[in-house]
Image (cartoon, rainbow over all chains, first blue to last red; front, top):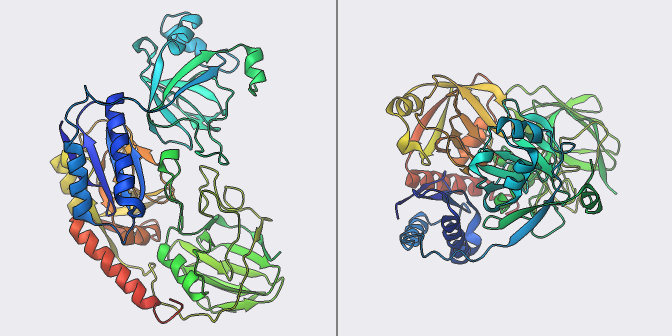
Amino acid sequence: MEFEVGPAGDLGLRLAFAASPQPALTHRLLSIQTAAREAFADALIDSLVGYSTLTLFYRPLTFERDRATDWLICQAEAVQNLDTANTAGGNTITLPVLYHPRVAPDLEWIADSKSLTTQAVIDLHCGAEYFAYATGFAPGFCYLGDIAEALAVPRLDTPRQRVPRGAVAIADRQTAVYPCESPGGWRLIGACPLTLFDLTATPASALSIGDTIRFEPVSEAEYRSLGGTF
Amino acid sequence: MRALLVVRAGIATTVQDGGRFGQLREGIPPSGAMDWSALRTGQHRLGHQKDEAALEFAYGELQVQPTDHCSLLVTGAPVTLAIDGAIVDHNAVHTVPPGALVAMSASTSGVYSYLHLRGGINTTPCLGSRSTSPREGIGGLHGGYLRDGDILPLGDPGFHHPSPDPGLSRTHSRDMLTLRFVTGFQYGEFSDPAKKLLLEQTFRVTPKANRMGVAIEGPTLQTGIRALLSEATCHGAIQIPPDGNPIILLNDRQTVGGYPKAGAVIAGDCERLAQSRPGQRVRFVAVSPEEADRIRWLEHHYTETKLEPGQR
């Protein structure tokens, strides 16, 4: 499979596959990441899987560039194809969602712009399983995909200054839950009452790259009983 | 409890140590002192051994009052330092009495200064570091920039003889700052005109400079690359947004980004860039990864040699 290995700054190495993002590719990247943690132990200060990339960061005084580069190329070459890839691993997590205009200011707009009923929008969003491709943007924020083509909407031209914690959002073919209050440009379609980022928990994030996520519609009463607020 | 009252919090004042690592998957950047050499200098001069935290503040504005006798020192961008109204040597370790008003003002060059107090700022570490990440609301006293009236706990001062200045300053003014960078990421796909402009033209630091990154302006770079899928950013990454004006990503950067990147500026030059004021002229010089390794080893050797006569 086509790939390239190159620097990510003076203390990082970046592996990028040419293949388009897909769960099997993410699982391969995750397994190379796990192998890197074992192979380099304390010399590896951090690492991150992206949609089709793995970036490894090393400590200044223990970084052996040639050895680390050779190791990464060797790992990438071992990825022959994705058909036989082991896609096991990763948790399946169900997130309760209240789909209601009170917590979803864009729900009706999405329905109108896609010529769907709001119920059809809800059915499309919670009718599929989503894969956790990447994290970033904010602590605990997880990029999930792919949502149905029929639901694909552009981001807001002007991001909202304040998106509430728990907001369930869509943009393009992606969906996500805002784990904390933050600015945001995605369209809000519902609200999840669960805590997805908690500094006192290990790990702090409820969702990890490689997980499979399902959304389950809940009533206002269930939403409240699970800790949800308006 | 030994404590420090923040009388005037000044501009972008935060608790910082060497930074927080291993949290990229949680979406949490490293943060830490923008001028690591200045942090290290203060730690060394006060005999700190455990990455004790200091107060980082921008453009010299900060007033504090310790509750107890306290040895302190300012490093990084030079400031005018006054203790109870009397101007004192800004580059010396001072021991102040309880309740003394320590006022720092109007630095003449550089951006970030560090107030070190013997024993360190003793806030509760979060995910292995006391560094503040304001956007994430993590670390420091309450996760954000310090405010007037905040009270910070100080660590046990122990016993110590101050060490002399090791001379590691990153704030020397220069007409042209050379940013050495290792090419990578999408550099190979950049249009030839964009590469040529990046390597041959001069840019200037803009006022859009903070702990997340420094925007520079000059000829606009049309990379010819459309939006990318999110991937890890890195310290010093030269990111080119659609407007064609590069942003060099620093300590509080977003952990992932979807804009094309030409490579990344080496660590030492990132410190020099962080300490540059708007208007500073900069140019880029591409170095091989091996050259970046040599520079890092030389800088490490230089630092350790300078620190040797002291505590280490």
